[in-house]
Image 1 (cartoon, rainbow, N blue to C red):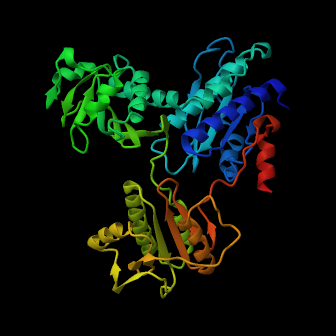
Image 2: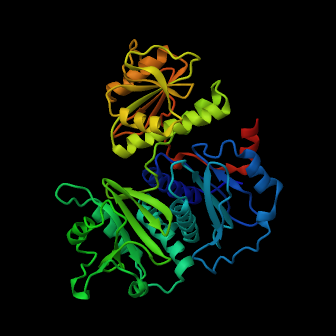
Image 3: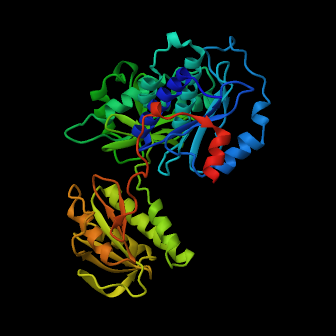
Length: 480
């Protein structure tokens, strides 16, 4: 059986928009779908960028060997035709986020995307996939002559809506449906505040939104009289008030409509917190971080370096697991400190039995980085020009080190001297890994003259030029 051109057009547009939107929200992202249009029709897969490669055994088990997914009565095509679909939960496949459902127009569908390791939460992405499933069902319920082709456009710009949907779901669980908090105005105000400077400074401090009915029971340090409460639309006024809670445990309290006062503790059981940290911030529901925000947009990133490539390199090295784990924790602590302080740094991780000689400032004896005081000293030495020299013995052997080497072809003139020096140096020292922290770029992990943390291994491709295949054929082809 083949899929007609109208159906291909529907999920091609939807998947293109989904992929583009998620790539802006979480970094380069792929997307895929498995679906069956009818209860007796075959399961198809549409995976133009091989997102599901490696998951063939599990998909075969779920959809070919096990027919439980077919043991559901079809939803009548005319009932629930344009309403929400019956959801199917995340399949919990390693490295993936999934969400799908059933409807009168599509018997079964499951959408997939990557689970990036630096996500604050999978919630907004799951809501994004849920909306993709709904859009596909809606389009398939329409006749081709009425197809508008706007699903892809919706999904490209869905970031704020996905965050809102996730916050509302959490709020409904904790408060029920009867609440006067309106999430869209809150999210808009947070973004406006995040890009509003006061005397040249970016906002810092916590702005907490609470259910209006709980305000009367809160122990305020200072509560504003009703006539003096600035509305959330008055962004400049609210930005000035944030100065009162900057670098403290105090919090600015809002009921979603106005700023009502300043409190320190004993907050209600449900809160939405915007934690402003200068050029960026984090959105939290109670104690769970939902996403971050910066540059007027919401993003999934924790804004922490993704050091998974370093962890993998250490696992493949000759270090014993305990030493490798300790080395990794030391590097993570140093990298995160440089990120928090917003300055560049270079860490030379020397895996040789005897550390190589590197030009720089040396000590009369190496310093044990397992000692908290020494680790704190190393964090301060990151500010000094040059690299820290860290050995496999977990000791700091020098700082202000200069990395030299002969020019190599893969140098990138768009990057600074710190990055290109690391490429040259590691090209000549295969047992050395260099971690480069740039103040305005992601962290780079460099080994053997190559950035092993470089971007994705796949290329964008228009979904309109790829055809779906039956899941049976796909599993057989990929298992050969």
